[in-house]
Amino acid sequence: MTATNYTMVTVASCEPSFLNQALKHTGALAEELKASAGAIITRYGVLATGEHAGSMMLMQGYSELNGIDAAFGVYNKSADYQALIGSGKVNVTLRNILKVEPLELENQSTDVPAYGVLTRWGSADSMVDRMRGMVHLFEDNGAMFMRYWTIMTGSHAGRRLLAVGYPSMDAIEKTYNALRGSDDYNSMVSDIDIDFRNIVRIAG
Image (cartoon, rainbow, N blue to C red):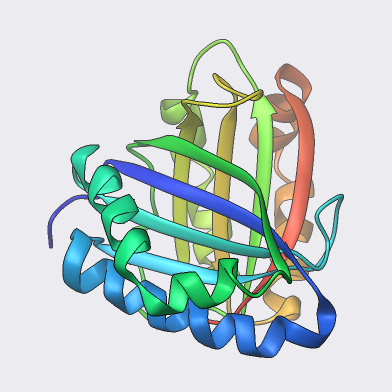
């Protein structure tokens, strides 16, 4: 599979009465992005916690930045995108570009997780080598997928973002119990500035 080097993330508020329909349109849009913009992977769902709770999130991964340009071309032609934006019930509140860092699980699953945990922090460097020694704590406790980025655009440019997908809330609990018992994890947390950790219910 072609490597994913960049990700575009979009967050949009949505009226609750329109959410189910909006997720159907987003799922169809995700397939269009794969077919016509070259998206390698897409994930979408609903933020369950934090300041954007109840908002939808769409992530799309590309090998090159020109894939993101192609995505906007898809938006212009997509009936599903126009149905979202033209509904008057969906409002894009955030869109950023992220640079993928070389950190992932040993066995990344292609199955759709039920939940994702997003953690954002500030650090002087990416700390990839330091984090590699902790990857097994996620994988051993049920994590299905891991992606790590440096944020390139927006008000949080330069900060780091880690996304980990899980099959259940139980797997999230087990993972964080294991992390809290790790000297390496506790040492790293003391050296970074975490300002965001939230759960996403993944729909596709």
